[in-house]
Amino acid sequence: MSIKNILIFALITLVIVIATVVVMLNFFVLNNNKESEDVIKESYYFNVEEMICNIKNTSGKAILKIVIETTDEELITKFQEKTFLITNEINKVVRSRTRQELEGSNGQINLEKELVVQLRKLFDNEEIINVYFEKLIIQ
Image (tube, rainbow, N blue to C red):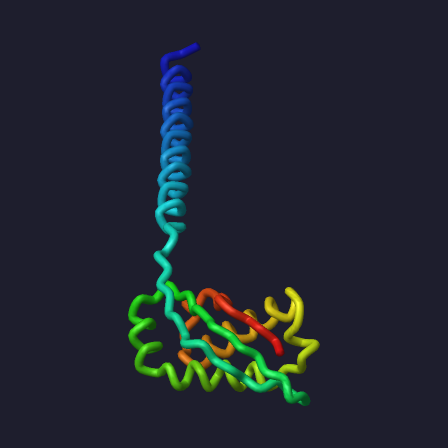
């Protein structure tokens, strides 16, 4: 082999090694950035006072106490200022449901989902994560 061939071979090997190192560094750096982006946000909670709501098409009532979970701390202040809007929205949702729609675990799960959707619309904020029932009694 001539010196020219040896230099070409060495140059090609060097380029391959450098390219491998760069690809590996990018792979690990990108993975570290993704992990830092997946940081869990802190949750904040707002307690809605106990409510009594009528149930659709019956003389029955629903007694409920709700907690709203959000990852937006400033939203808690808005909740405090607009509690009347929250209770009104909860009332509208519960009053639109029949006793059968509210009873059982599926009734509660569906009601939770609907309340989250409606509260997100009301406050124009997707950081309302969940609604929890401290009390849900259907009479």
